Length: 270
Ligand SMILES: [Zn+2]
Ligand SMILES: [Zn+2]
Image (tube, rainbow, N blue to C red; front, side, top):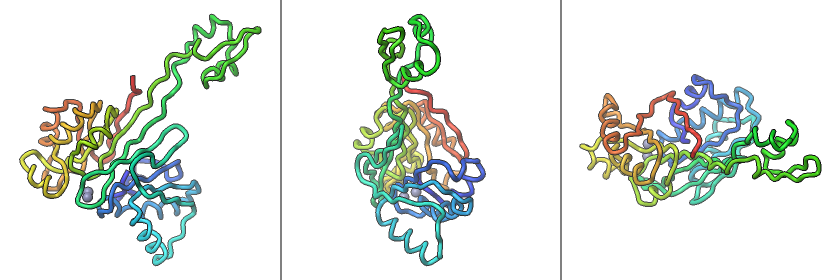
């Protein structure tokens, strides 16, 4: 999600792998969100990436990308499909989908939610054994939601599976003012990564530059029923982020301040 300067260095440094299934989502066309894109694509190509890659972004990006690659004679070792961002589902994966909604920034800007599709319920080993279902193929059929026949008796998956588990979701605001629309869009996400450019005392600047304060991020997270909040995009004017973090935690205790290389577990939704 977004591709600022140095994205390719971080990718290599944190061992994320350049030939993985991947999707690049660009929220808006400000340099700090796209400057790293060309470098990342080139680095992938140099490491002989072969998997196709999808980029979802405001469509103006694509003209620039094609022209720049032509001028610099950049050829890629993999296919790139370009998807212009719009409201609603912008990408469907095997077990997840990506939705987009309009943000409110100084240029055309978007927010994204990564949504895991609901997963089948937990398989009850003891019930399966009690029903005399032999371990192996029949177990995996049931786990995938298909009925099986054991000694002439038809067994339905619901007899051995718990209720379907909701998928997890992660929201990412990009640069934005807090809005009612985004509060709805991020409803119930397990993790919300939100613009926290300014501290509360600089609220007027946040309005002027179309960003958010850490308190505004916290209020939105609380109202949206998010489980956890990661503040990001801090203004360089603050030497430390502790102040912004504290402001947010007063309103929404489950807040962390994002930093390069931070790893957060997103537990399964209950
Ligand atoms: Zn911006
Ligand atoms: Zn920015």
